[in-house]
Length: 362
Image (tube, rainbow, N blue to C red):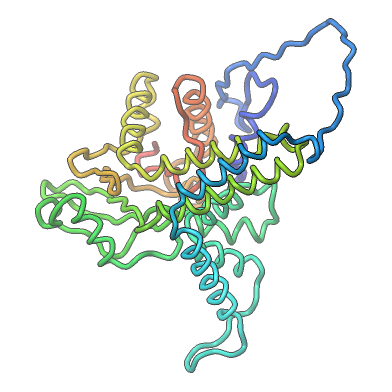
């Protein structure tokens, strides 16, 4: 069995000149659009620009930095820094305690493992760091294997929140559970950085999943992301040469993108647009996305059709569904690259927690 990595998606998208890719079985061809590059035949003499230093900064630039810091601190809120500091202290203390030889009665210390310790710390620090852990898990070409394997637990098995908290969020947004659902499984199917998912059944009999946003996640993200932005702005100010890397601009884009994830109405719209895209491209026989139940969806609760399948990286289970696994990865890559070219947005979080091979082969 050939092992495939979803990191190939990024590699293909970043390739400067890609026209087609043939899978190990030659009958499967990736339909990647040609990416053209242009070269100039004229030769020009370039003049090296002197490197700027901190002393070259103007008073206007200093005032701009101060204004940005104040604005970011205001957006994060007055309680963000103290509460985040306390949370970080608790996370570090609990993680150290897991491996300490001094334990409470009835508990034994875990054998120390750097990947496990770091993964636990990231999970306890919350959403921003879990997202970073997901990046590690999805980048086997960048990080050691033991870290990649350990951080795969950040994809869908982070520490869950209690059912009574989940119930409160659902009922605050949708009303009494008994009015809308025949049943909800109190044990989550999955728990990730921003939300956790519960299986449920509607009164009409359809099986669904309910994605519920974790409490106070918006304050946590705003605090972390604004700190990252401030740090990037200060670094650029102190080292002007770093401005060419656009650190603060990247931090701004990451911030806006992650904060958008907090509005599940926006996510519902994206899913519906993607389903329409699949229909228009004639892909619905091989690819699908879940139906959204709009009347049971809000900013913090998203109710979707339940799709049953196995992870795209579960080779053994996939062999029980199809004897042609190469076609699945090629279909996934074709769908993703076509969406990049044809849609106003694309899925930038393509990891094994977000891709399934369904029982019917789609």
